[in-house]
Length: 237
Image (cartoon, rainbow, N blue to C red):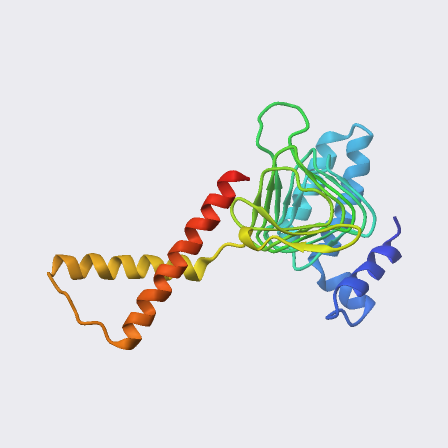
């Protein structure tokens, strides 16, 4: 892949890029990828120490660590990039985009395929962790901060810890799996209400509920029921 194509990829993916000079001198993701192309060629020809030394220099200069044994396809783009780690047996397809803090890591100490395989046109959000010898299907999206440890089929959107599929696109339609979306606000409200009841019980406090308080109490019961329903649905799946 030519340097010209690498630069053109940055222009296509990052609307903040204004000039070729800016990309060449100010984009650590571009620098890391150029270093990796050189280190990877050395690795494939058996110059292992030299390959590792080049990748180490790239890590020092860019804050991005890519093992020279990793296989990276065409038009790969790292946006911002600080804290990105890509392991030795990682395989990345074409037109993939990843953001800062992403880890494509391993879960085994054996000398086997222990890092993920990323399909074509995948986007991995900031801080996401994709771990182990798993497959991320083509055209999938991994949400920021997610932790993915299982195979993901093509055309999926994944969020959460551990990562769960919340949207899946088929040939005919796009399916929203709403029961998989974490209800953080509902859980926090439920926790707060339970804490309030515990404090009132310890103080032997039995307040008379106003109309507004009754509505809040009713809402909390509905949220609790919905959360229980979601947990039951997840267990069945």
